[in-house]
Length: 128
Image 1 (cartoon, rainbow, N blue to C red):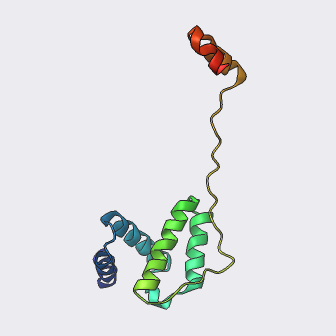
Image 2 (spheres, one colour):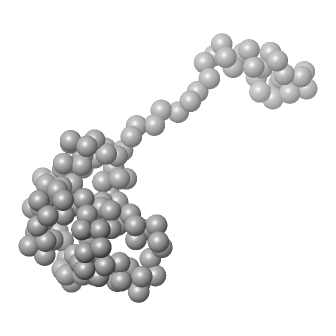
Image 3 (tube, rainbow, N blue to C red):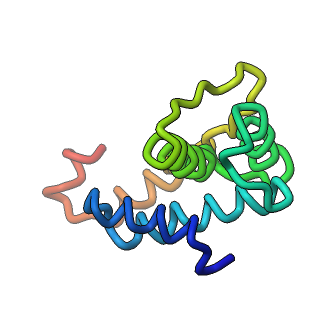
């Protein structure tokens, strides 16, 4: 499957559209994973239902981040749009991965006071 004519045709289209080599590699990887997830059935025989199942699998079973899931979706959308000339409509029951929750790093009151205590006198007032 590494050098299948189908994947080479996708590579050719990406090269003619001047996609970066890294984008090409990443898209081809996700397209391969999509095909393998669907028991090596040809993507032209698949549709929104299979795309939804694949994206849901990534979010639920593989626990990928939302950006990873979105990258997989972009690769699949590219394939359907530029190879099959078909627009995909995601089904509403697609489970979307959640963005990781980022908690800001904040100094405690005690930590802030100890840092201010180490400063030179001319800067203490500014940071107090």
